[in-house]
Image 1 (cartoon, rainbow, N blue to C red):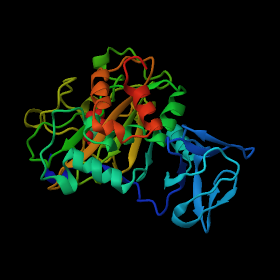
Image 2 (image 1 turned 90 degrees about the vertical axis):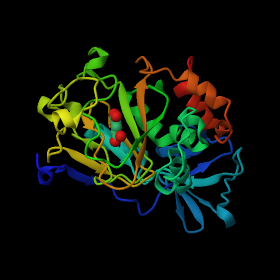
Image 3 (image 1 turned 120 degrees about the vertical axis):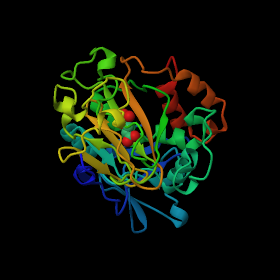
Length: 355
Ligand SMILES: O=C(O)CCC(=O)C(=O)O
């Protein structure tokens, strides 16, 4: 294929949000929720009940319209409630229920810039990308022990609520220790990824999980760097989760299952206009049904591109790789102390052996 005919995938751009909703977060990390009757409670679940909006002089509960006063330094006073002080924290751009409707309809959704800029900066430092490309990567500890930002991202509450709702179970675990996928600038020769569906919907898994059955896995890809087509953003065939088939064989001319693709020998995987590349700013989380055909992009920039990848599995699916060793290391690391009680609880539920 000539260079001209390559990289014709459709770019689907997820814009940077103009504004975000807010969470009101207690010291233990639980969020202030209001139900449809106006009753307040603390919640670990980031559904619509925990979504607030900053309004002039106050904070408004989006679903009910109830407003509480907001004083200097964002101090929010909630009368007659057990917890007196809340931190006003960045929330999602859209209501969780809106994201869920999209995920159910399309098989994917992007939570644009859901992570704070501080978290993104620390993730970039941990991955040694973006402003930290000059640093040497610490390969001696599990990624989740590198910095508290990794565990905070694992415990990001809106994506967890969406994953649990989509699969219809509270019992969700991560299928391997959270890892970084750092794509170096492409040299035109290196082995590149073939089109595939994610665990457990791959032939290597023996076809145990049928594509036609209700979903048992959602992939959570965190954009640590800005994701652009030029810089190697992931390519997808959006909607392919609903197709009872593996990627077409001519999208992977030598479909040597389990092996990365060697372009020297086989040529390139499909880069034509029937594929889609999701472009999203750093700090965004892309959720997609693990049946969706996809592959890593080609990084044609001069800079590395980092993502954090997590296969989120319904609890009845056996993990791809054991996570308890990484979890024990995390517990003993300073990174653990940077998480609040809610975040620590989520990491335990997702990663501990007997959780
Ligand atoms: O690195 C990427 O862009 C995505 C890789 C991925 O999702 C995978 O390997 O399954």
